[in-house]
Length: 183
Image (cartoon, rainbow, N blue to C red; front, top):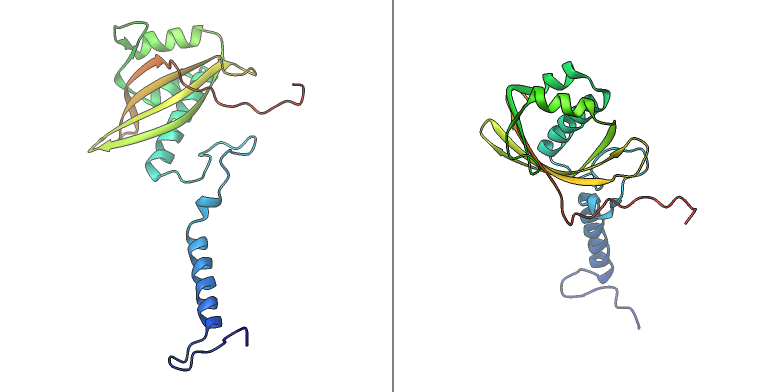
């Protein structure tokens, strides 16, 4: 006989062990769906590529996107609603701290540009959240021309931005663009 179906001593069979193993494999696979998630978001879908964002990352990604959208619309009241009264910006190009008024005047006077937030990380300490990310920026409708590294400090209780530090990200990989078919 080539297949020994039963074990006379224990009363178990190899088939029941096989069934148990398959059931266990099915349960493990059902509990870990992110292992099979896409690594790239579909077109026109905003969010974390693998769908495994923490609650903090989701919250601050939303706030950062709201800030970027308000800046793109040049909506001063919406932008100021996300900033504390004593907000300051620091950048590598200008070592001095800038107030929200100076920063917004410069942002709104510049050419309109799009910003795509990626690789966001959040660290929370009491009422403070430190959010760091890369932002790809470029003219509207064109591929990003520069990538910046940003560190924002948010007050959690009010969900308002206290300070922002921004610098050109030297050596950051540009986000892959989808082929157009014309290459």
